Length: 170
Image (cartoon, rainbow, N blue to C red):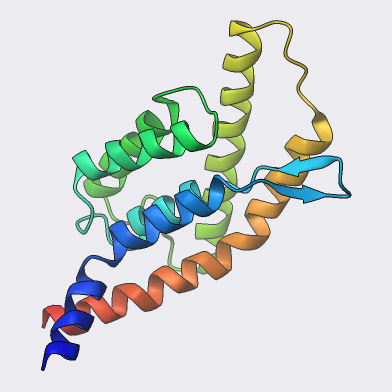
């Protein structure tokens, strides 16, 4: 009985738990060839997936807090990710089919467009605020490619967790 209640509490709170977990994973630097540090952006991916899968599960105040955590741990422009994911949440709540298409390829392409625009915009803002910053094209390309390759696995994880939530809510 207690075990079932603990499972229910865990799965109902899994959007917040999984988001915070992947944001903390994001704060750990991953190195490629001992020189290049990879910016994984798992936190943004998992938040995007939850917004895409079931935007009613995460409240806007939590989205704001999670976005600020992503910015804090990833050395991003403070508030940029929070603004981007909040806009995504409101777009998705207006029409559930905006981010998620009938075919997964459409969802994947929409994620690619979002992450590409977000990273370009973030780089432009960083460069305009500090002209001494050098933006490495290899890091940018590698980060976007890595995010696109990881997205299906993260989306599947969120899909499984969302189904568990629906099971325990009913």
